[in-house]
Length: 151
Image 1 (cartoon, one colour):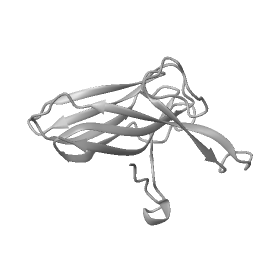
Image 2 (cartoon, helix red, strand yellow; image 1 turned 30 degrees about the vertical axis):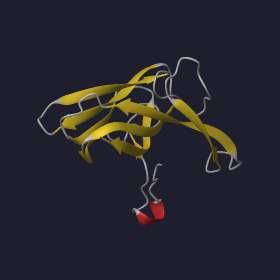
Image 3 (cartoon, one colour; image 1 turned 180 degrees about the horizontal axis):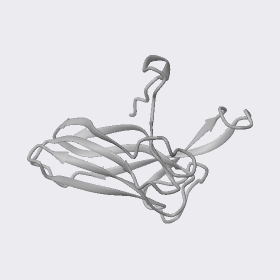
């Protein structure tokens, strides 16, 4: 299960929207040190991309207690996708349809977020934190929530 922050209870903020040169040029390129703290078997990311076109859009960088790191590239259509697009036969993530009303028309519309499972292959070192980074291209990486499974 994912717990999505309520913007009314979190200073008007609920998700991470990173920099994309076309639509979000003032957003940060990265958010660092998102705490994990423990032995995790897998993390599940609820994420998407705005203005997503095929290619590398960013990455997650995982930091272990011993100072080592692991990197998960964020790539369309492999493990994330444009939130306007439904299923793509080339993706490993799972599209989840959502209904939105806060769009330009004000009329309900369908969009898609993705769930992607990252398997932690380092099972003997605690995972301290992770960073989410934008490649700074046209695409806008969006991280909505993260959940995990402990060893």
